[in-house]
Length: 368
Image (cartoon, rainbow, N blue to C red):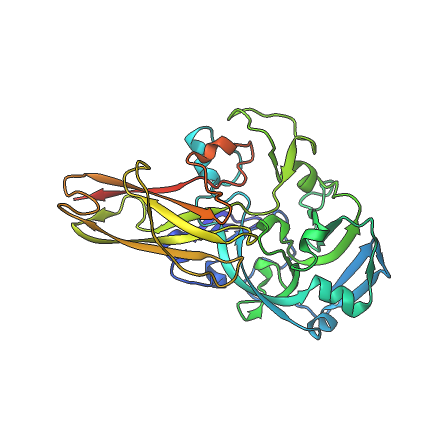
C-alpha cells in the first residue's frame, strides 16, 4: 500500500494489488480521512456499545436510536464502488498540478456493505420528514482537525438518496473496521467517498446545505471550464459539490512500462459510473487513440459496481500490434446507454483541488 499521510491516514492501493479481488478486502482498501476519530486508525472494529444515531431537523419527532436497536432492524446488502473525489488527481499534472494528495488510480474500492436503509429506518420509527426538507446533512463523531476549524459534514439532495442511502454496520461480511468508518457509516451508492460520511452520529434534515467549509468551499468543482493554474473564487453559484461519480474506466493490466515479448497480451480493467445508467460498451485503442475496438464487457455485481472488461491482443508480425513497434500506448473509454463517455483529455475539467478526474485512461508498455 502507498502511504501518503500517516497523521490523518491517507493510503492508496497499488493497481497490482487492487486488481486481485472482485470485492476489495479491508487490507487493500484505500483510506482518506479529513479528521480522525480517536482510536480510529485501526483495521479492528470500533466499540459500538455506546454508539447512537441522532435524527433531527425538519423531521418529526426527532429521535435518537442506539446501535443495538439499529442492528435489530431489517438489513440490506449493497455492492458499490467507493472512490475518493481526488482519485486520479495526479493526471491533472499533464497540464498544471492540482493541490492535494497525488492519487493515481488506487483511491477506490468495490465494497459489499450491509445495513439499514434510511427510508426503512424512518418508516420503522414512524418519523415524518417535513416538506421543506430538501437536503440530508451527515455529521461524524470525529472532532474538527483544529480547535477553531469547521467540523467535517456533508449535504446531499434528500430526494435523490432517500431510497438508496444505507446506514452501514458491516463491510464485506464483518463489522466495518474503524479506519473505514465503523461502527456506523453513511453509504450513498454512486456518490463520491467524501459524501459517504464515516463514524456517522447525526443526520439532519434541512432546507439548505451545510455551511461547513468542507461542503461550501472545499469539495466543489467549477461549472464552467477554467484556465488550468487559475484560482477563481469559489461560490455556490459558480461551483457544484462533488456528489455523483462520473463515468470512468481504468486499465489494470498491463501496467505502465511493462516489457512484452511477442505473443498474447491480456488487457483488462474495470468501468463504472454512478449506477443511474447502464454502461453498455468499453472501447480500447492500441495506437494512442487513432482507432478503437470494443472489448468484452462483464456484468457488475450491482448497478453501482465495477463492470470488468477484458480482451486478448497479439504482438508479432501481422498481429494486433506489429513486431516492429517499440512501444504501445493503450487507451480505454466507457460508454453508457445515453452515449456519454470520458473526455479524451481529462484536463478540460481541471480545477485547483483536482477533483473528479474521469479522462480516458492510458498506459504505455515496452515491446521487444
